[in-house]
Length: 130
Image (cartoon, rainbow, N blue to C red; front, top):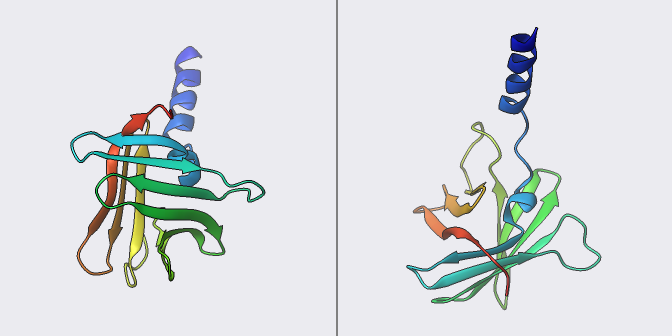
């Protein structure tokens, strides 16, 4: 009986859905080798949305927001924004590009694939927000 319960518990863990990208991103991150930090914070009055800023080297601003297609990852500049659908599975076309948000515990990698050469937005480890 105990082995059956253990198998069921293990199966539940193995099939548990991955948390949404916002839950994986929120907080502060650092890449000491590149001299970069990244901070993701929720703006007041916009549930589910996160604003991101990458400092060090070339400063950049981002936003992650829910959309009718799942999640959209956008890079902001003074004149416009460029957005990609966040890839949340193995299926689907890369046409137009996809943002891959790989946040597992203490590590984060954000990469744009399928929109020209692959481009790493950030790759680092979780850090305390000062």
